[in-house]
Figure 1 (cartoon, helix red, strand yellow):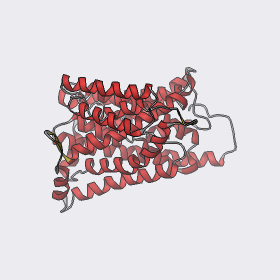
Figure 2 (tube, helix red, strand yellow; figure 1 turned 120 degrees about the vertical axis):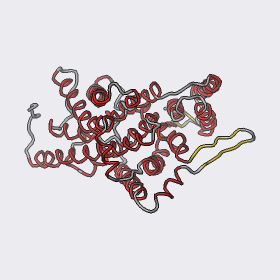
Figure 3 (cartoon, helix red, strand yellow; figure 1 turned 30 degrees about the horizontal axis):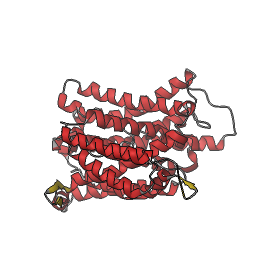
Figure 4 (cartoon, rainbow, N blue to C red; figure 1 turned 90 degrees about the horizontal axis):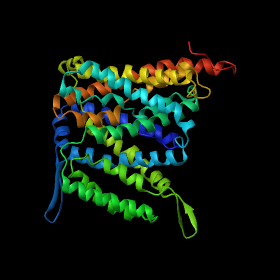
Length: 399
């Protein structure tokens, strides 16, 4: 997930809130309160209007309802960056673009190498391809001035491509049986949103009404309901004029939405999806091919893909290294990008219907993410101290 510029304190708090929610979930699932935790997960929640009703357990309302706002925020940030931000020119996107491509391809290939031939396990190939930018940037924030600002910008831009890739993966590979009548209704919802944008409608209520209709249609269509958030976000106008005043509806909504998503939606998702029973049997699951593919994909594939693709692109002259950053620091950031919490858990829930496989996948995501965070910190701490003490000099060559 991407972070808006200038909100470093919110980034820090959001990352810590997500970590706290994850730890509370693990503690509850390994305490006498486990039955309560499980009961809350499966608490039936119904919404009924006349004869129309939606009956789902609370966990699905979290994953298919609240997470719509997460995807909505991603879409808003993607649109803003493409129109006038870090992705607004080919030159600006070259380095993070190559890095993101490598950072998604290498983990997927590592996972496939461990699980080829097992159709059930192969559904999880996309789990290690995601980066949790909230937590990754939290690590960089905690390191303070030891990490050049250019590398934080690099990681944020990389995450834009990463999120776009995750959206495409969910849409193309995790869509089940399609219901044609619901898809037709969804098309009407999309047309309504396009019409609101075309006529430069700026009232939030209009997009809320069309967005709720679209979400309901997508929910019943077989396409994952969270993708409705992407369509809604892309429909919000970037610029508008009202009563002679120029303003950005997209920026306004993004600014208002971010605290709720970062401090509410993502921690809630973490709380409801991180409960893991820690035992010898659960630890033994880390030796399965799918678990090894996830752990090594995040910890090994991310660093190999991001660093390798960036180095190759720089050597070929089609990209440049982030200004003021050494190769060692870039390698440290590639390691930190192996933190794949929120989106990795989200994809794991789509990939594995079997509770045992999902449990092992969750533990593997946490292990791979912790290893990546620890290794990245270990690399960046001494690298940052050396750069801070050294006098200004020419960029270091690749060792």
